[in-house]
Length: 107
Image 1 (cartoon, one colour):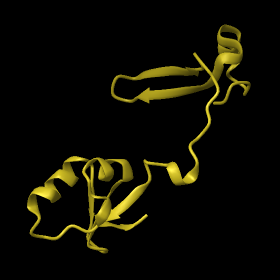
Image 2: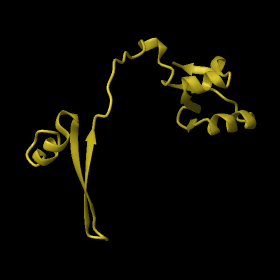
Image 3: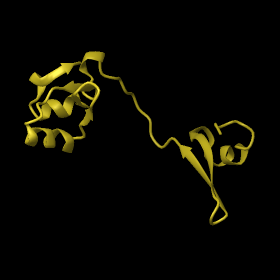
Image 4: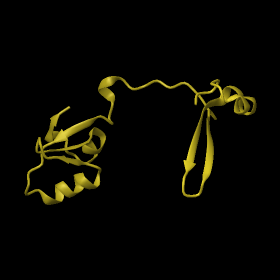
């Protein structure tokens, strides 16, 4: 429930403008209800990177079947095999760190 909605009044009195939302979780086995609150503890200016600078974007790499060690490195770095395209998908920054920029098939 978002702050200010019915049922959040008591928590609004405690946390004020810092309250973001309240969640209820239920444990059927233990028969316990949990109430959690999300509050803002800090805020500051943030400017996102320009589109082209986003190093967390996912890219596709071409790695040959017989390059077993390289495939293992990509997998260890969080790469995912995409069978339908026969490529590895991984974050650009991780591919760059592994020196695999020349194997990028799509950006």
